[in-house]
Length: 158
Image (tube, rainbow, N blue to C red; front, side):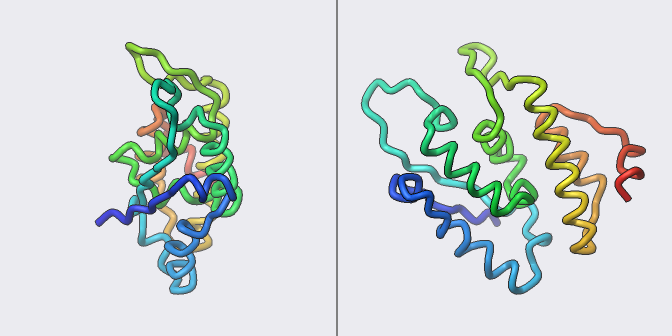
């Protein structure tokens, strides 16, 4: 069951992570964070003027909130609902990109590669500390962003 975190304009205006921390901190205290793999989604309510063509990931206040969330919880991608597009939207908040009307989001390839590899390293270390390292699940996560890492790569991280 997915836990949806509702974010309103005031959260972005104040860089207020409380909706996120109120969900994650009890999991941390109980030592349950790894078990909440793919449990999170965000419902973002950021008012825009009529005719504003920007996607949420193009709004500086929204991106800045997600940058702060990523700094606080660098393993947050593990919790996002990958199959429902939450990881892709999260990446769009942190990785330079453009929107194409016919092809959708177009990430800067080098920036996306750096983001993916950084998250693989962060998550591999964090999951090992939690006793929940899973190369298969990490591979699946990277595949949602268009990367297919060899299983042998994860031997280097073990």
